[in-house]
Length: 171
Image (cartoon, rainbow, N blue to C red; front, side, top):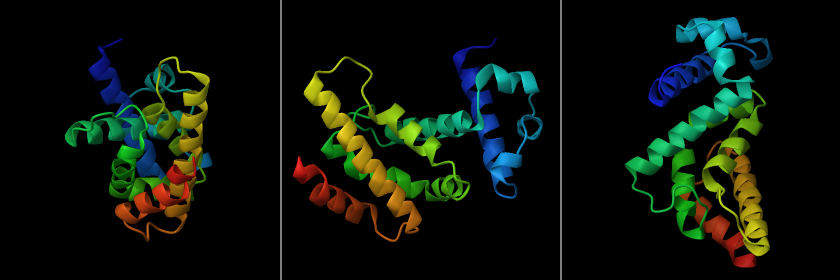
């Protein structure tokens, strides 16, 4: 198997192929053969890298966040803090078409899984910090999901204000 950059490139090609197929096909009817053909890879490449189509969507969202965080020089891109709420909403607004497409297909789990991967610390935390992180994760996700359903009517700044007013200030 190739190096990590090659593997990530192939994984992203497959995720992009899936997103393209989702534009005109029911998610449940999209086959691995169609995804692989769209990405110009073999079926075996798909199965070496993904267990499910949800995993491919999650991978794509995580990669988009990593690029966003790097381009915007975020101080703590892999950890939630109230200070990065605006960055979170700006990122999601920038990729609203993909998020809407994922939600319309009923695959919101991919969004939540990606969100947890990028904003939940990977190190041991104390009990208080663990529960606080989970509280904020679900709160932010709830706001994001409603924002998607409302077709991103509010600005990222307004969503940050709502978050700070309704979640961050209640802890």
